[in-house]
Length: 96
Image (cartoon, rainbow, N blue to C red; front, side, top):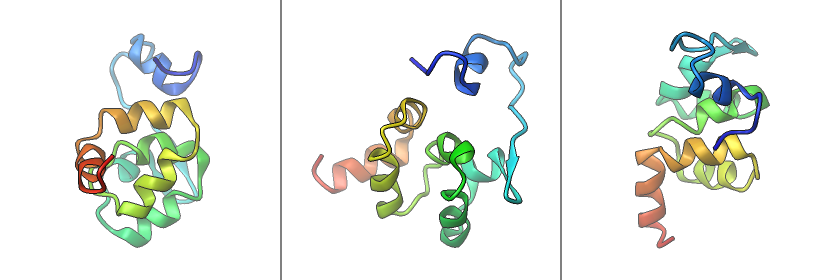
């Protein structure tokens, strides 16, 4: 389901003993990417490719960011969006 060898692939196989990978880029962490409700932070996090799959897990993104993430063509981002309730609600709201 995830790209072979990606962080998500390794997590899904239990390579991290079910611990959240500790990724920090540009002063932001994977945990922040998944949970921040601050649109300015979301925009800044989106500048870091390593954090995009984690950002795609965040159920509180703004509409344009959901659309932009979906357009990236990244399998890990797509898989994260597929399991994101906020993204599902966004798709319903825009008629997709």
